[in-house]
Amino acid sequence: MNTEINLPKMIRVRQQFETPVLEDISQEIFSQIDRLKLSSKIKKKQSVAIGCSSRGIANYAEIVKATVQKLQVLGLKPFLFPAMGSHGSASSEGQKKVLENYGISEKKMGVPIKSSLDVIQIGETGDRIPVYIDKLAMKADHIVLINRIKMHTEFDADIESGLMKMMAIGLGKKIGATRYHQAIMEIGYYHTIRTIAHCVLETGKILFGVGIVENGLSQTAKIGVLPPETLEEDEKELLKVAKKLFARLPFEDVDVLIIDEMGKDISGTGFDSKVVGRIHMPLIAKEPASPRIKRIVVCDLTEKTEGNADGVGLADFVTKRLVDKIDFNALYVNAIAGAEPEHAKIPLTLKNDRDAVKVAIGSIGLIPIEKLKIIHIKNTSRLCEVDVSEAYISEFSDRADLEKISELRPIAFDSDGNLTR
Image (spheres, rainbow, N blue to C red):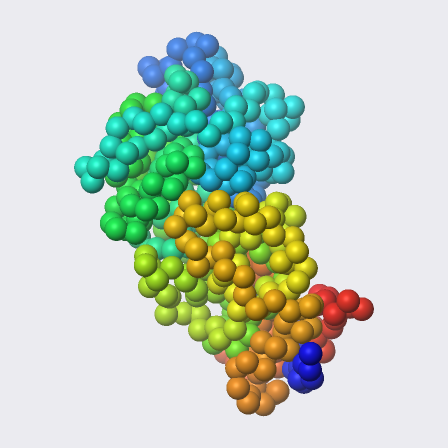
């Protein structure tokens, strides 16, 4: 293949984000649970099912462990379960393995992990959507949910991705995730998630939720232990903080965005759609107005995604090594349950990074090399230090939030034709 196209030189910049960090995570969880005054709600030796997420959340094992320990101090008997819809190839062992990849094992947590795809229908919403809960969790005396609060990849509202969504998609396992996404196509994400979550709250099973907010460096910024009575309103406040701290690309107009890796541990869509400005779900959502990116190249999958390349269809070009790592069963199960076949389409596949980048540049028109606007990132959760092409240098002067940390240098590839950073 003839891919003889000149490449611009790149310069590395560091973005300045507001980065509050929670220093003593365990103590914060202990003290906030104490403030709930749970004595009137619990009895000694009652069981507590703790729902865990499939996302790559900073300090997640520590957060889960602290919650377990505090419940044990209160005389309760906690166990863990995956609250992750169809992830982990929609199998009990697969979902348990997802938790183990995040350092959450029975040995490390000191409690059992009970993983099953079986559910119980507890009722239905006013729109006649059946509401399901993990069978093992429903049999427990109480349920606690632990999840990150952040912007959702496919809609904008005052409740997006977090504990309310976990009560729906997470607790509903594969059957719930599938049915709810079908409902979403008719009545929208926001209404579907809220009405299902309200049904779950009405069971009286939710003891509390632990909501986590991360800063632009993917560090734990804030934790809220939310009682069921005010969980929805409390989550709205945490989402406001998350939106304020959300990390973005340094520029909105991009000819080619190069992403080294994607995966479910980074975002539900493999790479955050709010970062790249693409959703590709025409039956559900409108495309964001910004950023304005002409072509996206994705080079590889993360190890922790276990071959699940959901969201790959948002890219324009990928590499053979990425495609070779895809577990198509995991990908298709996730895409079908999420009613998002567009996300499972395989883009134009090139031999290596060099070919993918050069073909992407060749597909955007006759732009002079010195005017090509290229941004190169590790992944969409690591946006502090990014490489940008020389065309952006003229825009640095009025940007106090950008620090130049390298000199101009060529785009470098190794002997296999893959990018080096």
